Image (cartoon, rainbow, N blue to C red; front, side, top):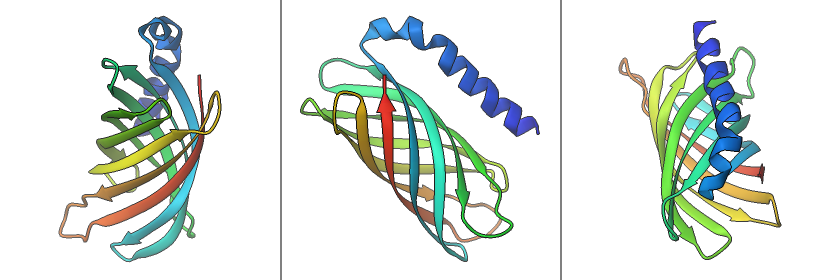
Amino acid sequence: MKKFAVAAALLSAAVATTPALAADGGEARVEVRGGYVTGSGLDDATLGVAGGYDFDLGSTAFGGAEIAGDKVLIDGAKVQFSAGGRAGAKIGVNGKLYANAGYTFGQIDDPYVGAGYQHKLGQNLYGKVEYRHQFLGNNVNDFDTFAVGLGFAF
């Protein structure tokens, strides 16, 4: 329950500061995503939601923060919450290529790293593809997640 409270506090802070940050040229975003997780005994589908905010770091770069909840679609799996950041390059006017890193908590309490690409599909709609590598401790094999997402930026 304590971990859920931390995730809720992070989301509340992100939502509360979004209007004040709008003047920096950045954007808030929310998305749904799904994909495939493999390794450490898993070969299953996953589904989740995420919210975040990206800050402009000049005309060609950005950095941002994200919180998410994802669930492997098997019996007994619980929602995994994560908090992390991403940084990358703006590719033209519609694309963002990025590296990300963060920490997952819930049934698994371990760090992750990854990379992805996000592309505007219209004024506020975007699609994305992302890879994450989850580092598991206690002599357990790591696992990888391959995901696609559809989101709304504002």
